[in-house]
Image 1 (cartoon, helix red, strand yellow):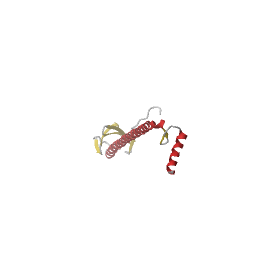
Image 2: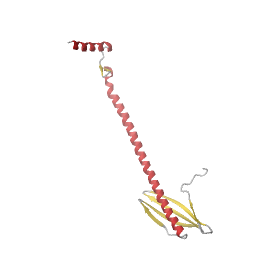
Image 3: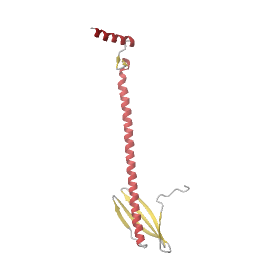
Length: 160
């Protein structure tokens, strides 16, 4: 019986200290309806953060794939230029177009003679929907030596 008496005393003590309000999990009965809005706001914040991180990750993956395609396209174009340079080094009068395939991409090489001892080689590479052209000039000096000059594929704006 003394055990029941202690429990009753403790209940009376809590009621005396906290007044007539009941406590549930440390909250007064006046705050008992706040759990649902707090959980909803917290869930909405987590959902918003998750959506933002997912959007960021997908954009990053898309940017990386575009960059990989650009690098592959540059290698395809340079392979065409190297094939053209090798053809001109074998025969300086070479004029027949060349073409080739590397992986999923293709290149076409065109030759022109802007000067007497000069050959221009243009390589156009294509990969999927992308296409780009780079060019080099091969010059022959009076001793018959050949010199290759790469034409800047990314021209700089004036004044820079």
